[in-house]
Image (tube, rainbow, N blue to C red; front, top):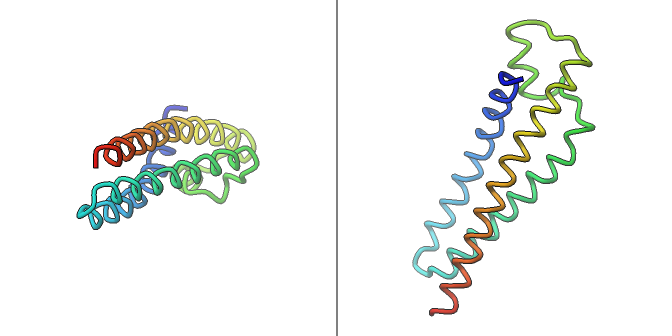
Length: 121
């Protein structure tokens, strides 16, 4: 199970890394106005959080044989379809939930900073 969670982390963090790069570039391009930059960053991180939550809701019905995790496991050995899919769904769902919690916390912090900056300025 730990191996599947490590592979799920790799897949999730790769996708979140590209999304975070886009968010950081938008944030940095708007730093001439801090309130605008914080609001844009907060909106984009909130959108990312909602996308991760939608993906999490889709996991129980997802066919894991069409996922990146399945391709990584299939390189090493031919897994049995049903038991391995259930284990992958559980590992992928756990890791998505963990990442969604952290993304939600970052979104709340950015919204708080935006409110603070907009009140001060």
